[in-house]
Image (cartoon, rainbow, N blue to C red):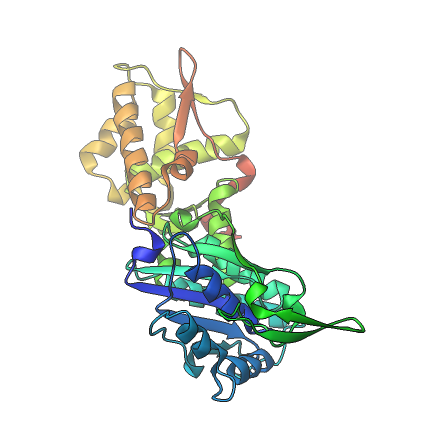
Length: 383
């Protein structure tokens, strides 16, 4: 597997507030790793005040700490310009001066999530995210967004600076040659050598949940809340919604059609699960079972399913159902469910929660989904 530094396009994405030094400190730390990760481009998220501070210190001609770092340590041509400094906008598109209210937090979360999603769409890109600067909530959202969308080649870190250097407005990275800077610590003034500073890049392991992310959210625009809700569907209890009027089911957050016979079988077990009775015993292999037939045909006859079942099939089931009918029907239902959910990248361990499961020597079968999580939406509409 390729390592992050081996990717042609290497992105550093960070949040900053009133201390833009974290950008140069992080680049310095990345460049001095055992396997140096020199970004090909840098992108910065901030508020309007933080963005101004970053432009004035990192990019302005009279300061230009970013270019000075690149020249001092021969880092090459890293693409970082004013257009790469992004400000979280409000609902009218006006840049936010700060993140203070709940609404501000939601806007920042959505903005950051979409940016991480966009940067991780390209498989030939490695993204390094730093959460060292900015409001704590912004750093949290950036780190969590990477957990939602990050891939094997992406990394998360925090930068640490030794001693009192981080208190200095003059410190942006350790110098190659001795250079004295003034640092205010309380009422005292210290004079420190920039060359002696130690910058440490702390790698932060994170859980990659991208595998459980629906394809629609990976490829489209998704809010932070929508992304988290999608993941929670897989880790929370299974829910089934059945719309018999339109022959649709909703599982794991996705709606899809089922063939009429398979839908009828699913409805049979859903109705039985809601009844609170013990699991159903399967019909004997070659003996037509009229009780099973009556139960199954009741579902076939609901909401025009009868018209969609082949006449010969309908007549055969009406005379009784045997285990030879039940087993392949159940197998087909399971295949249809797994195929529909797999198409939306739902992992097998989630799909398995929606299957009809049997247990015991003379197996009794039941849906695993809890009764309170089974809903017939056509009944709700008809109320």
